[in-house]
Image 1: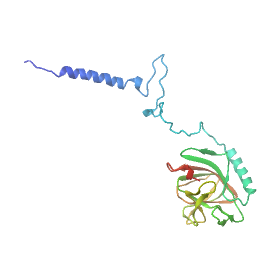
Image 2 (image 1 turned 90 degrees about the vertical axis):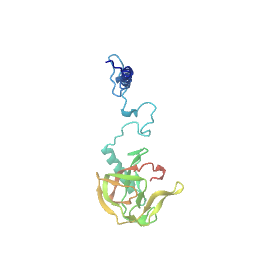
Image 3 (image 1 turned 30 degrees about the vertical axis):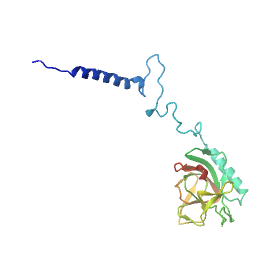
Image 4 (image 1 turned 30 degrees about the horizontal axis):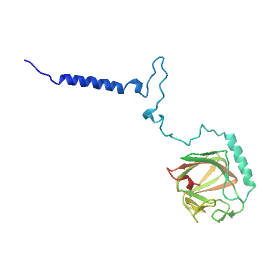
Length: 234
């Protein structure tokens, strides 16, 4: 009995073509893990999904050009220098900046070194409250990550700021949205802090520094909540 198989030829041909193209697609020369043949230059180190291939936008265009290292001895010298500055300006309100000792700024975070002085007599704060303490702060757009680098004191965190006011930017257009100052804090929790302690304060949580005699310094990293405008962050 004679049988006809009219589709066998086309099916075989299609199978051969499919195998050929599959081999081309998965060819080692196109793979992200391609190995160079002897005598050929090494294949480029292509990362998964090709995110680092030429023409792609940089993942962190504002990143520092190289690794940054801070020596603890330099940090302690900066603390001593800031304490000396504070002793010479006992009525100054606000904070003392550590200058370039610790300073970095990118799209997602900023870092700086700050010193808070201890005062024996009250002076007018930024919000015109007579106090030995600087005003409490509240930031809508950032986490505050503190590393205490010298001295000791207290950090009052949480609760509500009495006499809360928008921070006034004296060099700009005026009130800064999302930045608040005032004192005292009602209902906050007090943390005793010293050199080596860490503290993370979420966005919109009031906090106030109360340094012991001798003051305290800290490295502060402000971590942006997302795409919050840096122009509104203090």
